[in-house]
Length: 112
Image (cartoon, helix red, strand yellow):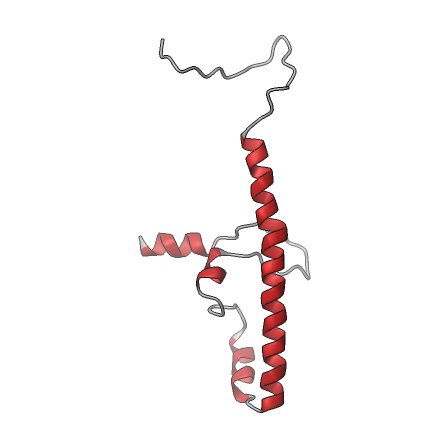
């Protein structure tokens, strides 16, 4: 069960693109445990851990704040809008013009 939860929380909540330069897709895991498993290569983590002067830490904090702001902006602009769009597609409009020969699914309350 824990593995399933981990897989679901690491699944992207938006569609993934294969274009270069595009940031990684958001996952629920990023909201549950911010700052964990950021996907940086180990050699970069070693470089970050070696630098500890005040100026560098201040710049890193500003950079992290910008990244967090971008994350929330992307989440609001993409994921929330996709939820609204997905809701529209799951509730089709009753104004569709049916023509002879169309295959339709009729749902009723009573079983026959």
